Length: 193
Image 1: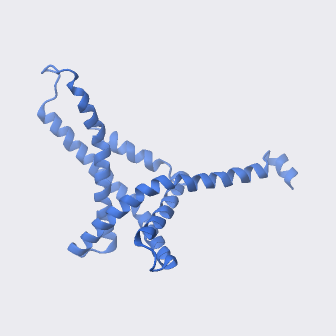
Image 2: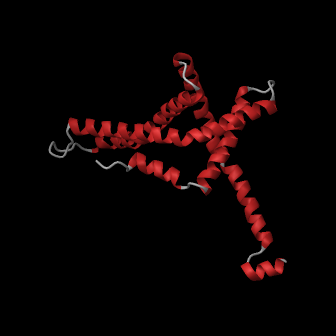
Image 3: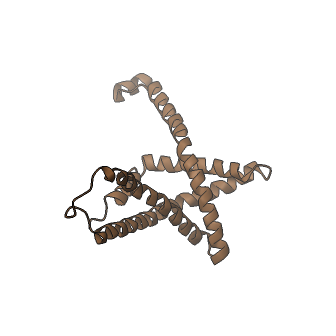
């Protein structure tokens, strides 16, 4: 059978199985670093969602969507304005002539446009992340059942965040690989003026 498959497809099944196994292990290891970021963001998002639910009495979906939008807005705000802030440090090298310097109105319009792009990107991101948050909530409830009441809430959150990050990475790699680059393009280059 192996010789027939090698003649037909030109592949070695052992080498293929080894590549699949090593790719799976690589995916498991790759999810560790992003899951640390997800744990921190999920912890912040849970605090924001809990305060929204207490103050406004919203349901899980609406409070989660608003909390995710708020947390992703802060992340995208830092990501969008970080290059501008670091570039401003180099402006002290020399003064621009007055005819080359941008006016205060142009700077304010550019800032407002940046805030608009950050807000729109955060809203789109929160809609994209909502199905993963449903999955993460289910995983958290299952992990809570398995680990019991003795284990800490942080351990449950960490395990749930890792498994959800693993699912999200697999979906991003194999189903919709354009999501990350599309969001970055939307944040930095999208919406021409």
